[in-house]
Image (tube, rainbow, N blue to C red; front, side, top):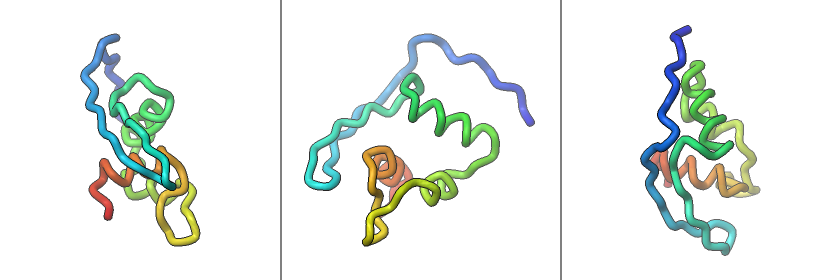
Length: 79
């Protein structure tokens, strides 16, 4: 396992607007929100993005059931 490096308190982020389940969301992809921290830690400790995506709740049609799942799908370039 590699050593973790502390990130600076202020970090760059990028905002995306998307729709999921008929609702509009704005995603600010950065490293200071709980979901981003959990995803970052999972990636640092060996979970690949497809494993994380597969572990999140899906709708009956296989699409992401949550805003976090939809955001990760978008970042991963999923259809």
